[in-house]
Structure formats: structure tokens, C-alpha cells
Length: 176
Image (cartoon, rainbow, N blue to C red; front, side, top):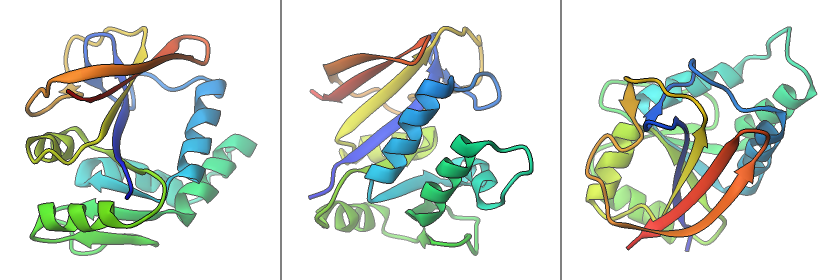
């Protein structure tokens, strides 16, 4: 059975914003390895639209960016959206019946399923479907934005902590 893991970079005050800070090279290498090791990714619409950046090669990419793009493109992606009518390569829309579809994906054997998108995470938290939360804390204070926990704040228990790169730390929690 696959484990559903919700993980995102976040500021010290709990906000996610891909434009406000970026992973250092060591943390970026970690993300490449995570994508290579997971069976699929599950995204909310907004996060998926941000990640579509990796569908098209950019002239200024180095080897690490190319490695991430290759891994991301090869991975199956599931997108939860009421407004999108189509998605890009190797991606599938999750229609009505979100809970049943996610339970079906999790029931398949294989490695973790990564998921991203605070609003989607709120819905899946309320349904009790997230198995692990990975918070990549960066030494940045934003003061506003989209919170990591955009929905219910579940009772959690810390299961691991690890320094990631030069300035981030990953806190791993399971539902309590």
C-alpha cells in the first residue's frame, strides 16, 4: 500500500510561496531524488500549474534542473481540479469522487505518492487520507500568503527531523 505524503517548502511563519524562497543546491538534489523514488504525484490545480514549468526545457537550466525535469516528466501525475478540462503529458484529472479515487491510488502497491497543494491537503486531511506531513522550514518570515495548513490542523506527532542543505530543516509528522 502506498503512503500519501504532503510536503512543501514553507516559511518560519507557516506560509508557502514558491517565489519567496528556493531550495539551495543540496536541498534541490534531495527533491530530485524524492521525485525519482515516488510512484506518483498528486496536485491541486494551482500547484500543478506552477509545476508545469518543468514540462518545457529552459535555456538557462543546468544539469540539476534538467535532472529534475526528466524525473518529473517521467512520473505519473494526478491533478484535482474542478476547472481544468485537460492536463499535460503523463497527467490525469481526478474527477468527482475524490475520496474514492485517492483511496484507490493509495491501495496500489509501490512507493510513496507525493502530494502538494495546501487547499487539496486541507480536503485530504479532513478525510483522514494523508499519512505523513513533511514541512521543509526555511529561515524566511513572509507575514502573509497561503498557509501550509490551509484547512483543518490535524493532531500530529513528530517522527523525524533532519537538516536539509545549508539552511532548511525537514520536520516529518504522522497523524496522532
